[in-house]
Amino acid sequence: MFTTKQNRHDRHQDAELDITAFMNLMIVLVPVLLLGMVFSQITVIELKLPRSAIAAEQAGEERQLEVVILTDALRVNYPEGVLLREIPKKDGVQDVKTLSIFLQQVKRQLSEKGIQKKNISLLSMESTTYQEIVSVMDSVRSFQAVIAASVVNAELFPEIALGDAPSELPHIASSNTP
Image (tube, rainbow, N blue to C red):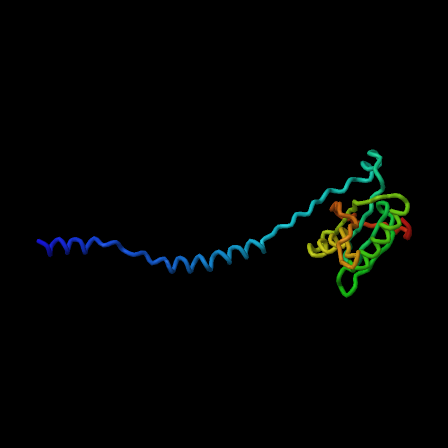
């Protein structure tokens, strides 16, 4: 009888769990998921629809600064439809650096006249690529300036409205002063 009891006892031993493989999976999976979270950031840009010139006049609003993205150039208008400067493409790409420098001058001139402007309208043609729109938006929103020995993004025109460029643009004599 003693031997049969011992045989029964041997059959009911607790099984050991080997969780080494599971722990190895967790050690690899957790850092991979954490790194993935860092790279999946979403940026939201607030945009507005441009108001018509008639509606702006009725509301008593100020004149609108516009950048028209053409297939071969960028046109800066102030007020609506009055050409300040046309910036041709450089090496087949829109010259956003020149646009940024010119808009900095416009901002300075408007500030000297007591006009604090933060809004701008970007008008694009149907053939304008997404990348062109984004690069123009980046150049009109802010510029890099050196303040106290550090580079910061200074504000230009952060309130951007998108719209369609007119199908036929009038060739108006340019005015270099806003």
